[in-house]
Amino acid sequence: MSKVGNYIQEAYDELVHKVSWPTWDELQQTTVIVLVALLITTAVIFGMDLVFEQALTFIYKLIGK
Image (cartoon, rainbow, N blue to C red):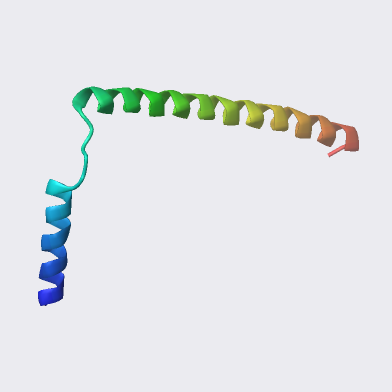
């Protein structure tokens, strides 16, 4: 049990004293960047889905299914 307690103590010490936490402004900026990237990725995947749906619908109509 001593190993678990030691691990928790070392993890806490590292989080408090060694980790460089971002400032509030940096956090907001990176959050906006992530959200914009998410929207762009979502739009690209949605567009690809529409294109493939139309292409497959066209192909199925050609082969008679």
